Image 1: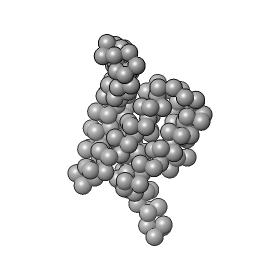
Image 2: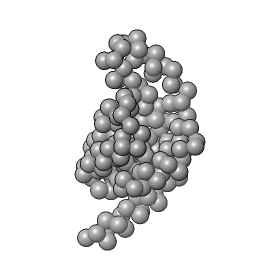
Image 3: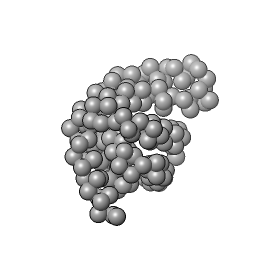
Amino acid sequence: MVALLEAGKWALQPIPNVEVVTLLFIVFTASFGIRTIFVSFAFTALETFWWGINTWNIMYLYIWPLLILYVYFTRNKGGLWFYSISSCIFGLFFGALCSIPYLFIGGPHMMFTWWVAGIPYDILHGISNFAVCLVLYKPLVYACTRIRKIRR
């Protein structure tokens, strides 16, 4: 799972705010359950090893588990449209979620200005998350279902 997350992230890295990490965490959680949370920590560790330590490390330690918990608790309601819209909303509010550490670093003003400065990127992130999920959700769920059957 971590290899797929990394490969997807590296493949889309040249395109700003277009990513498959959100979709993959949604699909993995819908298919394999709460254990996906351990994958998020392994992914964060590998990213930290590759890119070094910065404030984004803190963000990844709560952002991906939050997404996983959301998907886990809504998995009975979930489907293509539900998760496409959810991934869009997640992308739109990604910057707001990422701004939380700045509340403790520089106070509410720093948190707010950091978030507002990134809103254009969050809009692109939300739109691209929606499109990516709409196109790839069903094939990835199908693949994970096949893998789960083989594993048993």
